[in-house]
Length: 78
Image (cartoon, rainbow, N blue to C red; front, side, top):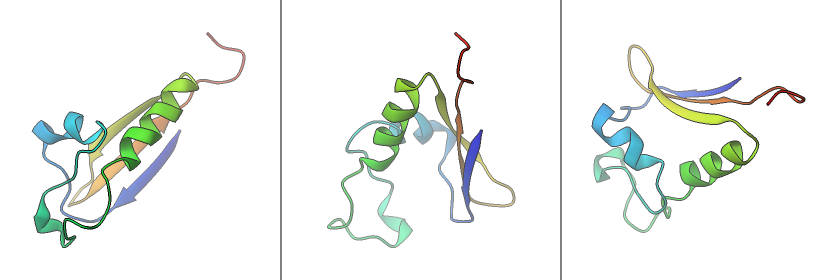
């Protein structure tokens, strides 16, 4: 398992699935302007992880922030 954490504002539960889709950007309240990023990072990470038999999940971090957790299968397991 690999987990990447931050202490930002997080992502609402209703937006987590959408944030894993290509070209989806977070809300503009995060301090980024619309000329920054393409909304591909999480979708590419998910595609690579799933191609290796794993799963990517987005979880809440307490007291604030987000955890992107990748769980990969062990070599030799179905």
